[in-house]
Structures are given as C-alpha cells and as structure tokens.
Length: 263
Image (cartoon, rainbow, N blue to C red; front, side, top):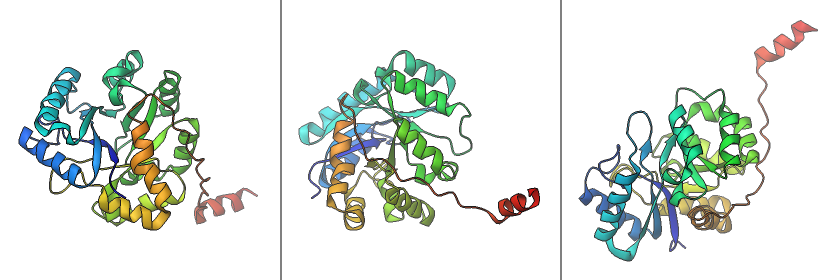
C-alpha cells in the first residue's frame, strides 16, 4: 500500500533554512523516507524574508545529497514560497527557480499573521502564467481556516491544497487534526506531504497519515493524495481535481440581532 509515495514538501536541503543542518542529517532524513515507502521527494527550502533563497546553492546541495543517498530515492527541486512583492515579481518573470522542477506547481505558504488584500489578483496573475499555486498546510493556519469560503473559491480558480501528514496524527495539536479532517470532508485536499524538518519531531514519514486517510476516506482517495497527484506535480501536466463542497457559513447570534434591529 505504501510503496510509491511522493513527498512534495520537505526541508531536506541542509544549511539553507530551518530544516536539515548538515549533510548527515539530510541523508538520515532520506533513509526514513525510503523506509516509509517514498520514492520521490521535493526539497522545498523557504523563500521568504528570513531565509535568503539561492537557487544555485539549492541545486548544488541537492546534487550532493543525491550522490550521497544513491538511486534509492529521487530528489526534486522546489521552494516554500512566501507571498511578498519581490518573490511574486521574480516568479512571474521566471517561474523556473521557484516551482517544482521548474514546471507548473508552486508551493505557497501564507503568513500566520495576515492574508494579502490582493491575494485574488496574485493567484490570478500566477495562473495566467501557467503557475499553479499549491497552498501549504492551511489546517495549521487559523486565518485560512477562518476563510474556508475563500479557499473554495481559490480551488475553483485553479489553486490546490496540501495538508501536512503529521496533522492527521495529532502532532500539531487537536485543532490542526480537526482542521485536516474538515478539509478532507469538504473535498479540499489534493496532496498530503511531510513538511519534514528533521529526523525526530518532523520526519519525512508518510505511513501513519496514509493509514489514517485510507481508513477514513478510502484507499482510492489515499492513492490520489499520496501518489497520483504528487507524481503529476513533478511534471507540467494539469491536475483535474474534484470540485470542493460549498462551505455553509455559520450565522452568529450578533449577526441575527443586527438583522432584527434593521427591520
């Protein structure tokens, strides 16, 4: 069941962000991934205001790590893309440094403190350049979970969503676990990935999450989220996914009072 998984979000590239700190740790992380049945993994270093993203260095490190681990697992290149002006402008000019394997799919991480007011325009501009934004781990972001209706609209616009494997196991707390399950029930998940940073707290092991998804939502869907869709994301092919369910907005008591007062 777990033999050909593809992990599209990991921080196995050492010395470039808050992930792996050494070549030895990178190799140890990859051995965990191999043991868990992952055949392909994408190195996605942060590209944000804290960590300078150097595509040439990332390519160099990936080649070094690949040589160290051999052909037991294939390492692909991407980044954990943050939404600030220079990043967006550079990606629109040339996506190849940021997207997975320089192709279509871009891993997009939102800040926990704010959502850009121009986000609809940003997504539209990216999609017009044949760049598919993959929104990473929204189940761990309270602001995004408060805007499920917007996420449905973004999916219908052409965006996709990736949930962290460890959210299903409770590693990130009850809230993230509940949110991950809600997104699954709403048909709003297209990838499950590790977002691995180390060998202990956040390892690149997808097995337990796949078991949970298989038991809760069926083996066919699990195969799509852990194998089929992630493998397509390594290419320039388009993923034709299921339409998400509409979100029923909860009506607050205070909203009811305001309506009553206006009559």
